[in-house]
Image 1 (cartoon, rainbow, N blue to C red):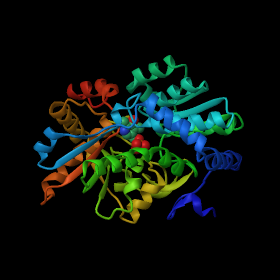
Image 2 (image 1 turned 90 degrees about the vertical axis):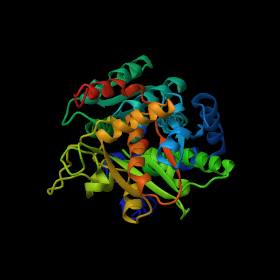
Image 3 (image 1 turned 90 degrees about the horizontal axis):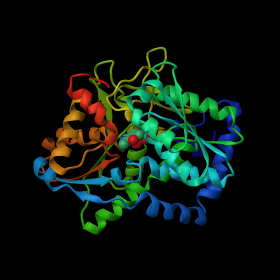
Image 4 (image 1 turned 60 degrees about the horizontal axis):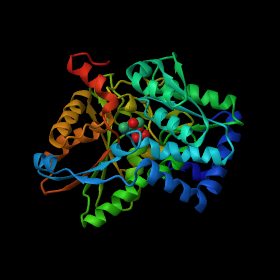
Length: 393
Ligand SMILES: *Cc1c(COP(=O)(O)O)cnc(C)c1O
C-alpha cells in the first residue's frame, strides 16, 4: 500500500489498471515539475498578475456589528473568473503544459471549474473539453456559454441525475480513453492520489495568505468557516491552520431541504465509508452501498462524496462539519448583499449562513474568518427563481 496516498484510512487509488499509468505519471510530474522553483515562480507570477492575488482579508464591519463578533471575509470572489477554482485550474493546466500534453479535460458542476479550466487552457494554448451534466448545463447556462466563448468544447452528460457525479464519471472515462495525450484537471480535493493532495497544495495559498494577513493585522482567528462541496476551498483554507489548536475549523455542507430529509448533499452529516471516483472516503449511500442522489440549491455543492482529507479531519475531530439548508443559505446571501454590498456565490453563502447558528452560542467576543469562495453573479437566475417560489431554475 502506498502510504503517501492516504489520510489516515481515507484516500488511495481505486481505479482501473488502465488508469494506473496516468496517476503514476502525474505523481512523478507533481513531485519533479510542480515542486521546482521554475514552476513555482511561473505560477506565482500568473497568480499575481493574471488572477489578481493576493485577495484581501476584509473586515466586514457592518456584518460584525450585526452579529456582535468580529467577522473577516477572505475575498476569493475577487479572483479572475470569480472564484477560488482558478488557483487550482491554472496550476494543473500549467503542469499539463510542462508535461507536454495537448489537451486538458475537466468535469464541472456549477460551471465554475469548467470556466476556470477553459480560461487557463485559453491562456496557455491547450485544447479543452469540459464534461457537464445536462441539468447543471441548464441551471448554469451562462457559464456554459462562457466556456464555449473561451474556446472549450462542452460535452453534456444525460446519464443518471445529470449533475456533477455523472459528469465526473464521464470525464474519468474520457481520460482513460485518451490517457497518453490528455491531462485530467480535477476541480476539487477528490479523486485518486495524488489529486487530493495536489489540489490542496494548489489551494493552500488561501490559508497561507489568510494566516499572513491575520498576523499583519495583529489578530488571531478563533473560528474559520468555509463551505464544503468536494472540499477544495475549505481544505486550502484549513490546511495552514491544522497545527493551531486555538482555531476551530468549521466546514459547512449543503443541507438542501433539510439534512433529515432525502433532499440534501450533507455527506459527512449523513454518509458512510465507501468508494467513489477513485478514492475511499465518506459518501452518501443506501444500505446496499449504492450512491444516493443529492439535492442542493447550489450546483457547486451538489456532490455525494467529499475529499478524503476532510473525511480524516472529521473522523479525528480536527475539524467539524454542519449542514445548512437552502433557505438559510438564501437568507445569508441577502444579508451579506445588504449589509456589505457583496453578493456571494450561493456556495459561499452556506458558510455565511453558519454564522447565524454559531454567533449566538459564543459567550466571548470572537474573531471569525469566513471564506467567500466565489461571487454570486452566476447565481442570479437561481436566486430570482427561488424568490418566485420555484425551488430550482
Ligand atoms: C465549486 C465551488 C465550491 C465547492 O467546491 P469546493 O471544492 O468544496 O471548494 C464552493 N464555492 C464556489 C464559489 C465554487 O465555485
